[in-house]
Image 1 (tube, rainbow, N blue to C red):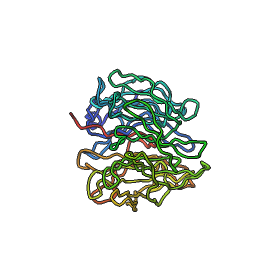
Image 2: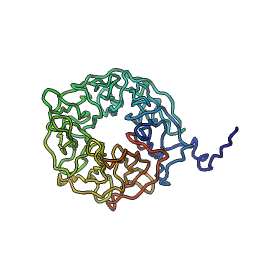
Image 3: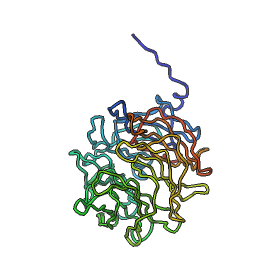
Amino acid sequence: MAFAFTVPPAALAQYGKSNWGQILIAGGRERNTDEDTIDNSVDLYDPASNRFAPEIATTQMKERMRATATLLDTGPNAGKVLIAGGDNRNGVQRTSTELYDLATNAVADGPAMKSPRSGHTATVIPSGPNAGKILFAGGMGADGGELASTELYDPATNKFFPGPTMRAGCSVCTATVIMSGKNAGNILIAGSDDSRSQKALLELYDSPVNEFILGPRTNIRGVYSATAIASGKNAGKVLILGGIDTTGQEAIALTGLYDPGANTFAPGPSVKNIRERHTATVITSGPGAGRILIAGGGNWHDHPSLASTELYDPGSNVFSPGPSMSTGRAGHTATVIISGKNTGKILIAGGVNSDGVNPVATLSSTELYDPATNTFAPGPKMNLARADAVAIQLPPAP
C-alpha cells in the first residue's frame, strides 16, 4: 500500500532555512517504562515566535546522550556547532563528532576524537598558544572508567590531537573559564576525587603552557555545577555546588567559592536543598542581573525531582528561595535567550520528573524564567521528550 504524506506549509517554509539566533537542543534520552531511548533528533526554539520548529523541518544526527555542543568561532567551519561524543543507543561511548550548520540546518560528519567519551567537558581556550582550540576533558571511557585524558580540537585543521593528562579522572565534571586574577584565561576543572584522602580535587588547565596544575583541595565531592560570578564582592570567583558524603552513597548540600586570584577554596553559603543534575545560570537582565538561578535537580537515588529554585546573590553572598517551576525536573537544560521578544529570559527545557515512587517520566515541556518579574511561565513543547541533552544558543545573523 502506498502512502501520501502532506507536509504542512510552516514546515516547508522552515526546511533549509537558516537558524541564526535560535536555540538548538540536541540528543539526550527518553525513558520508556524501564528502558532508555537515545534521541537522534534536534529541536530548534525560535525566540521570535516562541515556538519550536516542526519535527519534519529539523535535521537528524547520530543518537547521543551526555554529548557536548560547542560553537566554532574560527576556521573553515566558523559558525557551525561541533557536537561530540556521548553514549549511543547501546550505552557505548562514541568517538564520532558531527558539525551542525545553522545556515543550512544540516548535519555532516566531523572528525573522530582520539578516545570514546561521554559526560566530558568541551571548552574553548580563550588565550595562549592554543587560543581558539577546544579542550575536551575527562568523561566516561570505553571500559566504563573515568578518563584523565584530554584532547584538543583545532578548528583551523578540523582535527583532534592529544592534550595533557589531568591528575585524576572524572566524568560529568565541570569546566569553567577563569575571567580574572593571576589565572585569568585558564580553565578550572571541578569534580574529580582523590580516592586516598576522600577529598575532591580542583585542577587548572594552564593555557600558556598546555598542562594541568593542581588547584586547592575541597570538601565537595561530586560537583554538579561551577559558575563564574559576574558581579558583586565575589566577582571573578567560581560558585561550586554539589556534595557527596565520604561513603560515596549519599548526597549532602555543600557550596564553595574558588578564588582564582589566590588559587584558594573556601566554604560557601548554605543552600536549602540537596540537588544533583540541576542547572545554574547567570541572570543577565532585570533587577536580579548578576544573580545565579539554581533550578530543579534531583536529590539522589530516585528521590523526587525538585520544582524549587534558589537565587544566589553575589552582593550579599547569600542564597534565597526563588520561584517554583510548574514541574519538578532534573537533567534539563537552561539557556539564556539573546534575541526576540523573550530576550534575557531563560529557557528551561526537558529533563526527567520523578516522585520517588512511580517510574521516571521524561519531559517535553519547557518553562520560561522572566528576570523582570522573577516568575516562571509555561513555554512551548518540544517535539520529543528528552533529558541529558545539549542546548546551545546559536549566534544572531552576521
